[in-house]
Image (tube, rainbow, N blue to C red; front, side, top):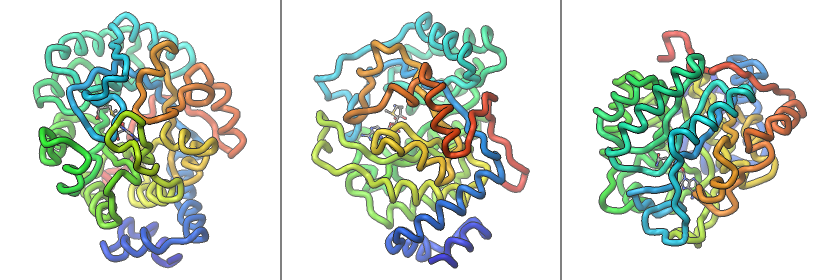
Length: 350
Ligand code: SAM
């Protein structure tokens, strides 16, 4: 196993069968070894710096009905909200003073009627803060909408593919959604020029080792600039309420696999990982992650953006808890990088 891990680091790939072995036969020692190798690779590229992104959850209205997600359309127990542009700009102002130079605007999937407002918002943010990056995570849109957002000044877009297996995709989503459209959107984003992020939930219901191998191979081929992976966590008001959460170990294993395969990728240690375990954020960083995304949303709305049960949004997961984040990073030998943190890699990686 150690030889496989070393080869993955050296060659940045393995055969599908070898990935299958790694994913199904690793033990505690192997996990420690791959986490250490991945941490070394991340440190080689990024030093001991961790990028921060201010996450603004702009609204929880959603036309989609993903079976895993707490803000799915059919959940009648969630109180819906949508921040207006002034409120979002206020969040950006607070974040800017705290030192954030990337704002991530994430929300449920709205219809195209809201695109005009979004375009105005992006322009306003970029005019007031020319040195910040705007990242969007607003789901599936038409190529025209993506283009308008890009022209308005957004430069990054996060859209997890969730699974690259069509049958598994259908297990996780209603009939109205398709893997083909998700991949079409990802290709559009990339060709428009967005730094594009994709990824999966680890341990999502129905996920098999073979599915994970397919995800690894897809991500290897797509070469996203950002890779978002976190554990699946159940939400009480969804059809998947009774499924167990994804495991810490498997999430850390996948984080390390992606780091070894994509040395320059921006890989967050996710809120879901920090929710799964109090030391999840730090363990993610020690497994090769190099980004954290503290919550910059207005405090009174945070509880409503409930994707899964007990979602963390205070302390080091909150923008106002940056000092706490700084201290917890220091304890493991890291410090915050207050730069924009754009993707940059030698040509051979692009
Ligand atoms: N609507 C946009 C989209 O789907 O890309 C952005 C918001 S969506 C809530 C953001 C991400 O949350 C999804 O890509 C999904 O992977 C994650 N998510 C949703 N429900 C989750 C759950 N129960 N456990 C872990 N992650 C979850």
